[in-house]
Length: 205
Image (tube, rainbow, N blue to C red; front, side):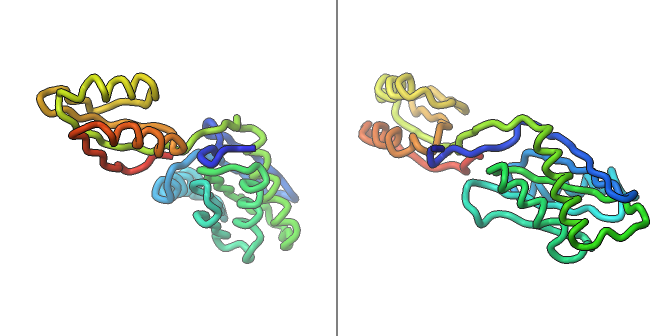
């Protein structure tokens, strides 16, 4: 059973292809961290395949079930984006975008044929990918007087978060990045140090 801050995603971009009665469906699966990043990649794919008839896609961001989008790009409603999203869900993935471009082969495939084609192209791309488990991460900024340095660094040594933007002067500060499930424990330990202030920073997926 996966922990609350774990999710499955793909390690790197991958592709797949499916053909049916002259039509060619080329799928590109990409790892994305936001809807904005997904939109940028979709536009890049459209430029790369500007001569294709359709550029259909689906993506899912984060571990909740409400941050997703599908687009049929001119195909009959429900025949492209939904089958693509279905494969993302079937592989239990998050932070994944799949764009399937179609080159029309002259023969209409019908709703069932389209659903089958987009589903298989998306599945093929994911079967060609490496699936990994990642952890949701959060980031905080802490500041503290120099006198508290030893106490702070002992906790950091114990917890081993990622550190950045370190300033060690009379007034010290640094950013810490760590698993979301560790947040309550780490902040609980830090907050008892005299003179420390802790602020949340934008979280990372």
